[in-house]
Image 1 (cartoon, rainbow over the protein chains, first blue to last red):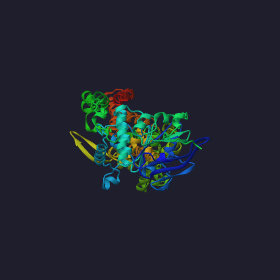
Image 2: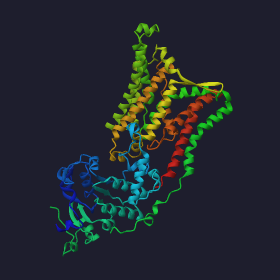
Image 3: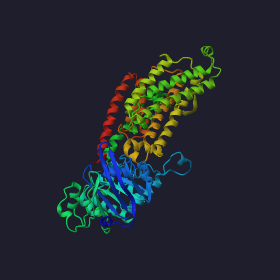
Length: 273
Length: 358
């Protein structure tokens, strides 16, 4: 598998081996191997129903898987809930933007991790709003995410700004891996550029990203490695510097053209079983 | 690859949007209704309205409703509803009154208006009244979160159950022989008296309890993590769940709070009227919900404040009082409140449409 190493520096941070998952009669994941290495953006692509979200949900403990094993930071793990995965340093940006639109940016970024005041007031649950504001402000500045007035409720912000907050929240808290499920789906051109830049920056800071997307130009612009799922199986691993969008689409749809299979084109295609 | 320029040119989406002042103003018109009412009634009724004794009457009249309103504010901010509060109030007042009567002396002694154990009896009645309210609230919360039944249905069910049980316990009549000490030492006891002009405002225990509850609730809602989670759950329960918040546990607490405050209101009702009045309070739940909504809390959750709800509770209280003084049939108050409720929700919707940009 010489190609699996394309764009990979260092060992796997998160590695899934032989993951199998059934939903009743539906075989949603079939013996899936998937790994995330330090300093890489690995794209996970596939048609609707290919098993992208199922794989991510199995990895992060949203639901259990039937067979297989997951090794995280060198140790076998089995997260019982997304909360456990988060505690271990894996943050997920969900497709449907898991934000509370009536809260402001600071409240959303600190949701579930609020700082409390010291002493008796803190024990009574009083929030340290100033400290959370200052920390959010500093972190967003460092990340290059600009949100107008952190105290404005998200409902008053544009879609791109809200996405910025959701991404910033994940990046701020992720210590090991960030998973992004269609983070650019609802964004305009400029906002997309912002999010893609942010992803590169996070990667360069040493935190790998799993990037789930339908948008091939975005994937090819930012990914270091592309894993293609089809009908619950990993059907290809591509190097975006050498493969083409056509190769990716062919692998996704299963209509492999001879061109991408032939000669020394490094787009390795593994057939499932 | 990392050398892409970042900065303002890549982020045209970040300019400050001008605040929609006109929309914001339109929703705060509700806050002007209260002072406007006070001014109008003062002009037309003069001293008979604008005097401390009358304000004291208004405050006493509003004190039990305010407790229900505080509980409903939390519930409605979570995008829930509690229809059971009025019935739970009645249930708790029956439990409190009967405990006070039975534990203060033997049946003969009580009939002879003698209460040898009244300190114990009254204390136990207060505790049991509050706890019975809490129990109904926790039951609401558990049914809503664990059985996944909508709050409207659960609390409609417990409305009927608690009122029915209250009537069974009391035999359908107001509980008699409540120790008079309850009224003299709690219901009408003034903790301190504020002299104002020619009159005085007696700060009675029910008014004090309502004030303390309002202050604590406002701090809890706006300053603590409990309040933050209340808003977050109402705004997007899934997001709250994904952020690691135990949504079910929080909702059980919120409904428990609402029930407990209804229990406190039931005890105060006994103290104010020296009996458990099973016939009144039938529409207290709707009064509480209207007050909360008039005060700017959204029935869809995520938005609201204690201060708004308090204003929303005083508008009907002052209307009724002013109409009575003017000799207008107090039933007009219901008509006016209905209209104000519709106006409040209309203005709230307008504000939100202006605010939510896409």
